[in-house]
Image (cartoon, rainbow, N blue to C red):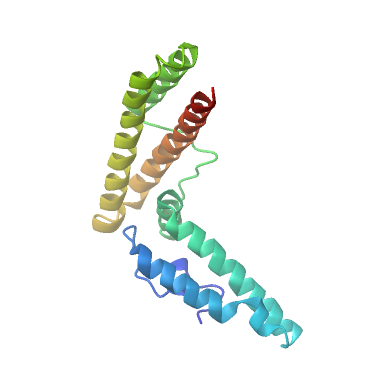
Length: 180
């Protein structure tokens, strides 16, 4: 079992990188979780139980981070000194900001339509979001794994965060549309 100060990748015995084998991650998580589950240390000392709880918590957080592409990319940037500052740095390329504004306008227009009229334009907008997400994920993989350009990747992380946030809004709209 790795120490509490190991990286998420080290904790699971995985190679560090954006591209990740999901099955290997899932298997490693189950193995680590089994080894450190607090129930296994019920009869142990207070120190053993506390350490098991800390390791289980670290394993849960590491798994949550590594299985999510956005969180994994941000984590890799942070590991390499390029904190994406997703909560304080909103600097984006102008073209990306214009696209975001256009998407918001399209969503507002969709909200003003009758439910039966929104289907086709909604599908187009959904396609744009999915295509943008896929392109950003490909750019992140290239920047992180191939070129190791962590500063550039941190900017891409911020863009992906905006896309994911808009996707949530779009999904909420789709859910409301289905129930009306």
